[in-house]
Every structure is written in structure tokens, then in C-alpha cells.
Amino acid sequence: MTGPQRQSSIFDNSLPAILRFCCAVIFGTAILAQAQTFQVIHNFTGGADGAFPLAGLTADGGGNLYGTAQGGGTAPCYAGYGCGTAFRLKRSGADWVFDPLYEFQGGTNDGQHPSARMVFAPNGVLYGTTYGGGIDNNTCGDGGDGGCGTIFKLTPPPTFCGSVLCPWDETVIYFFPGSPGAGVPSGGPLAIDQSGNLYGSSINGGCCDYGDDFELSPSGSGWNAALIDNHFPDGGPMSGLTIDNAGNLYGSVESPYAGAIYQLSTSGFGWQFNLIMNLNNIMNGGDAPQGSLIVDGAGNLYGTTLGGGVGNGGTVFELSAGTWNFSLLYSLTGSEGPQESLTMDSAGNLYGTTYGDGAYNRGSVFKLSPSANGWIYTELYDFTGGSDGSLPISNVVIDAQGNLYGTASRGGTGTNCYEGSSGCGVVWKITP
Image (tube, rainbow, N blue to C red; front, side, top):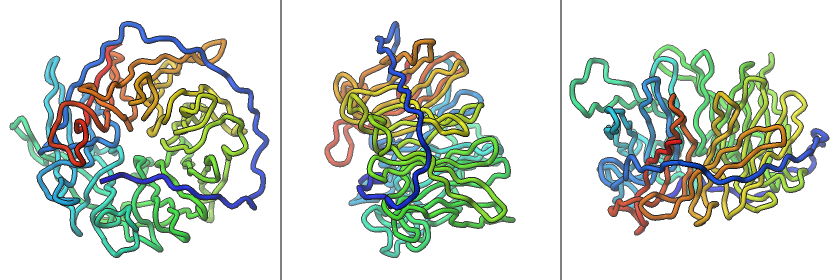
């Protein structure tokens, strides 16, 4: 049972040169974490709570945490294993109460194996995607895992729930049809604009079966779906889309060669595709961007790569607004870098996780702080692969007290895990 797979392919080299990049590389200074306290706040068991959280977390205004687990649950999927779950970790004083919100059922009427982070709409509804389930017409390849995937929404109970555990209502709002339409959503979260339109990417389908970008627009009691871009002749998007204040969308692809960053800008004739950076043109800039981009208040973009860089453990970079000049903020060291988006706090510090870097090659949590002399790198935690978890594919959530939260896809104390894995994954907290 796996999530979206990275693709190896070649982008069309006939595309014109995009920009001359200003490659003034800012190398940060690494320091050790000070007085950080790491705590596991939930160990997945592989039962009704789920197993293998392949996505990060989303927080509400009360500091409660929401997420998905790709496996587990009670419905049989993938050789009898569970179809996955959606959950909430609710604050209760100094403790956390695990609340299963939904168990995916699989099949043609529901999704299975959620692998992307859920996002809140302004009305309090959660939206997410599943990697499988739904329409199964043999056009999604092995990636579909019993269907081409779905987009779902989770709605709080319509009336007050006095029970400790209060399931939410799940509705599939879109079934990915597969080629020639969109098929198998990427591992990135959906983007939501001010009108409630949803935007995302798929790794399968489109004109060349390398994926596409799509839009879902609310219409009465339903949704209208449209492909807005399929400029991926040799390698598709692995991340989700990011939206800026002007309504432009940004995404990344793993090809050409090292990968590329693109913009979708609105016009009177639909969406205009602009390739704004080709990592193949940046020495030691990294390769294989996986996580979604983030945008700051000035419109600058921040992103990561899974591999490459001076330390071969991935990179963190910035693209300045308008000119899209590239700055290498830090080169990570290890085997596999970040697979999810960065998080920026109010002071401009960046936080993220790595999948296989760190002292034990089982992943890490890091912080990058801006300074007059470049960016200062702090290793906040190195996963050991034991009861603390391993291999995080997670963003970092920051609460009002500065505590950090995320998931690790493996490790922990759970034993009822598919494929004989050592642990079913954890949700963790770091207290500064």
C-alpha cells in the first residue's frame, strides 16, 4: 500500500529559456537544538484509529489537530487491510483525546487511502483527497490502488454531540475519472480561494498521462470540474497547488531532470502557464521538489527539494516575487529531504521535516532563522525509528504557545501494521 509515486522522466528541452537567475547562494549556519522536549501524543495501532499517517496536520482556531491515516480502520481494503481514517486530536487540559472522524470504506462509492493533508474552508468544512477508491476503469495504472481516487468533505455533526467521540459526515464531492481526465490526486493538499473554489493536481491522466491541474467550482448543490492545465509531457506534479493574494496558482513538477516550478496566472482566456524556474539550471539547487510551495505576504515563494544540494539531503530555497530570482537558503545533509511544505511563523522563521535525513537517517524536524549573515539552521529533533516514530511526510503546525506538531509515517509502538512495519506511525509534539 503506497501513496503517490515519484516519476522519472524528461521534460521538453525545446521550451525557451525562462529567466536568468540570480544565484547568490546564502549558506546557513547549523546549530544544535536547545532545551527542546519531544513527546508522542498518539501512537497509531493499525485498528480503528488508523495506520501510517502519510500527511501532516491541520489545526483549527481552538488548537485541535486534524489529520488522516492512509491505512487502518475496520473496512477491508488492499488485501484485507484497512482503507484509512480521518481523525481529530482534541485538547483536554494537558492531555489529548483521539477522536476518529471517519473510516473510509473503499469501493466505487467512497475513497480509500487518504495520503494528503486536509484543509479547512471558511465555513468549517474539511476537504481532502484519497489516493484510491471511486471510479476503477483501469486507466489509472497501479497507482490508483482500486480506483482513481476522490475528493471528499467532512462536515461537523449538524446538532450538538454530547459524546466524547463524535464522527463527522463524509461526502465524496468528486470522483477522479482517469485518463483522459484527471486521475489519482497528488500527495499535496488542496488550495481554496475566497469564492470556495478548490484547486489541486493529479499525477495521472491529462493529455499524456503525466498528470494535470484541476479546479472544482461549487454550483448549486454540486460541483463543476475542469482541467486548467496539462503542460506535463514528461513528468507531472507531485505537490499540491498554492494560491497567492492575487489568485495566481503555483506548483512544482519533478521533471525536467531536477524539477521545475511553475505559475498559473488568470487571464480573460483562462489560465496561463508560466515556467518560472528550472532546477536543472541551478547548480546545487536540489532536485525532485515534492512539497507544496508557500508564499509570504510580499509574494515570495519558499520551497524544498527531496534530494540534491551540496549535502545530497535536499534543499530549502526562495524565489523572490516578480523576478523569481533563486536563492538557496540551506543545503540539507542525509539521504532524503522534505516531502511536505514548509511553515513560516510570524517572525519569518521556517520549519519543516525531512524524510530520511538526520542523525539516524530516519527523518528530522528543523528550523531556519533569518539573520544578517544568512539563514541559521537548527536541528530540532532526529527520529530514531523506534517508539518516537520515523520517516515523517509532514508539515509543522505551530500553536499560540510556540509548540510544534506533526506526524511520522512509521515507527511508534503499534504492532497491527501491514507489511510487517515497525510501528504504525505517530503524532508528535515538540515543546520549545
